[in-house]
Length: 116
Image (tube, rainbow, N blue to C red; front, side):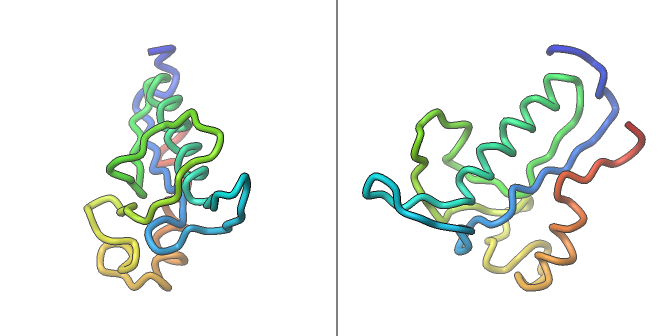
């Protein structure tokens, strides 16, 4: 723990994309790289930093086998789920994927609850 300056604050973090939607893709060094893998890694690092300052942080998009990684080129996969275990193809909480992007993600993407 670095400090308690965020104690009592709650953060909901969404890295966006994931599952069947990798976001932007390109090829480098003969490998495909996917935006969602890097966004997820950054969101995990932010989550760790928030917690280190006493906050409670929840990751909305989760990947059961990818944590913070140190490789330069992160391997693409499609096994991300949303909080609660739903497949990203279905969206969140039974909301269709097209509506998920506007109704849920807009509300949870780095949204802070309470005063800071």
